[in-house]
Each structure stands twice: as C-alpha cells, then as structure tokens.
Amino acid sequence: MRLFDRGGSISPSFSGIIVRAEEPDQGRAALGGVAAAVEIAAIGKSHMETILTGITTTGERGAHIGNYVGAIRPAIAASADPGVRSFLFLADYHSLIKSGDAERLPLATLEIAAAWLASGLDPRKVVFYRQSDVPEIFELQWILTCVTAKGLMNRAHAYKAAVAENEEAGEDPDKAITMGLFCYPILMAADILLFKATKVPVGSDQIQHVEMARDIAGRFNHRYGETFVLPDAVVGESSAILPGLDGRKMSKSYGNTIPLFAPAKELRKLIMRIKTNSQEPGEPKNPDESTLFAIYRAFATPEETAALRKRYAEGIGWGEMKQLLFEYLDAHLAPMRAEYERLLASPEHVERALREGAAKAREISAPFLAEIRRAIGVRSLDARR
Image (cartoon, rainbow, N blue to C red; front, side, top):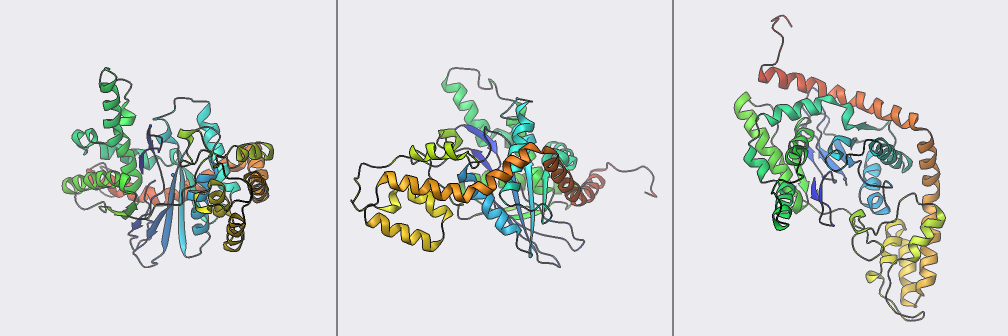
C-alpha cells in the first residue's frame, strides 16, 4: 500500500503488493490488500497461488501506459495461469479520502474497470469486484477500529505529513484533515485481514501499512482469541516503472503521463513532446538513457528491442524515433482502445461483471465475518443457531 504518490502529495491509495497467504482447508481464499499486483502463495490443500490487486478510482482520465506496464498487464498475465487465483477490486471507498466529487466517482470507477477489462482481464477467471459491494470489509473496519490504538494512527505517514505541512504554513495542525485520512490504515487492514494474508512483500516505503495491520490483528487476537493471521512484510523488487514525457517517473502528479486509451491524434502529439537530448541524426545514442527507448522496450519483444538498440547505435534521429514509437504504440493499443470505448458506451456490461465478482468475493468474506462476529460476542441469543 502506498501512502504517497511520487509527486509528494498525500495519496492514501492502493498500489500493488505481493502477498503470500494461508488458505485453510475449508477453502477460504486468502486476500491481501492493495495500485501493481499481489501474489499470494496459498498454504492449504490446493497450494494454489492467488494474486490480488487493489485499484484506486481517483484521478482524471483513467489509466496511463505506466499503470498498464507496471500493474495491469502483469496482473492480467498472472490471472491467465490456471494454477493462479486472482482477486482484483476497485477501492472506491478509499477514493473518498481524496475526492468529494459525487459525479466524478462513478465515472472514474467505470473508466478504471473498463480499462482493466479492455486490457484483457477475463472476469470469468478472476474475482473482479468493487470494494463498496462487499459490506463485510466495512463492518470489519469498525470492529478493528474498536481495538486500534489512537497512537498507532498518529504515527501514520500520511497523517504526519499533513500535520507537518499545516505547521509549516502556520496553520492549525489538523486543518482540513479528515477522519478518513486519519483512519484509512484501518480500512487497509480490513482489506488484508479479512482474507488472512500472512506474507506481504512490499516496497520499503510501504512497510508501515503491513506493520499496522499486524499490530491491529495482534491486539484483536489478544482480546478475542486467535482469529487473524498476522501478516509479515517482505521487501521485494518494485514493479516496472516507465519514464514520463519529461523523463521523470510517469505519474499524474507530475502531469507527464500518456493515457492508455488516448486517441491516435492525441497519442502522437504526446509522443512528439517527449524530452530528448540535443544529439543530431547520425550520432550514436545511448538507448538506456532514452525515454523513447524505455517506452518502446516496455511493449516490444526482445528481438524488436535488440533491433532498435542497433538503430540507436547507428544514430537514429529523434524525430524518426518518435514517429516509430507512435506507430508501434498505436498499433498495439488500437484494439484495446476500441474495446475501452465500447465498454464506456455500455456501462451495464461493466456493472454486471463487478456485481458477479462481488458475489464471488462475498462467498469468501461472509463466512469469515460470521466467525469474527461470534468471536466478539455479536451472535444470536438462540443457542440452537
């Protein structure tokens, strides 16, 4: 889970993590939480891998090609493996922390869901759902809130950064800080603990989320008995990162993205804006220092990449390279773009896929929440039930 986007703004959002989880014999799936992929090696009679990706629904214009390369494509590739169980959810309640635009939220949800489906996600092979359609997550969030120390939330990086920013500006420390921002790590913990994740490989800047989930789970288990698996953070390799138009990491915070489904005319215009050095045509160029080459390589085969590397050594001109990249990307993305536009025009198809996914998710979450309720004493007064 990521606390900040790379632009430095407070972004309590999901990023991809990899989770290894226990799967009990009764067949409950392990589910970890949180914008690349989550890999869970299940320990149970099936020993089946489960991949989970939590997807934010904030931001304008949906996904960009960096999202596709770093998160969407790897998760979809993994989901195609018959030995893998994949869960993908749209974290729409997390998005409420950053966005108060009630009109924008459903559109953003549609855009992100359509982006994944158009990119090749098969909802028959995955559990693809909207967070808000699984009420067990939010009931568990309240239960966990009641055992979470306020001091733990005081240490959350996003909250501390917001306080520091206010203090530096001479404002009240808690100006414009909502309880959503303050408590969102508990919602993230619910996403993780509800599905018994045990190993959570993350980037070094994301370890705190797992530590908080572990602390909350430990407090609950101490009070009510062994219920949750305590997740362990494992720092792993980061997902693929594409440079943006200006050479920095592609991020909406920097305004340097290439939308995944930009029309051909806009795609060409953006590629022509990509920053290059002043080397002339005919001068040998270093492909490993070229944003154009990095983007091409992310989509090309090894053979195509090797051939282009040779052309760099021969001194390909920047204008020629930009046109080559445009034509290559446009050919690659055009079929997905057409499907994306079709889905945007038929939101009922996307809605049906999400609701069917939520039904599958609740087959897992509802029985476990029933166990949690019994553990805390919220149960029927009729002993026969």
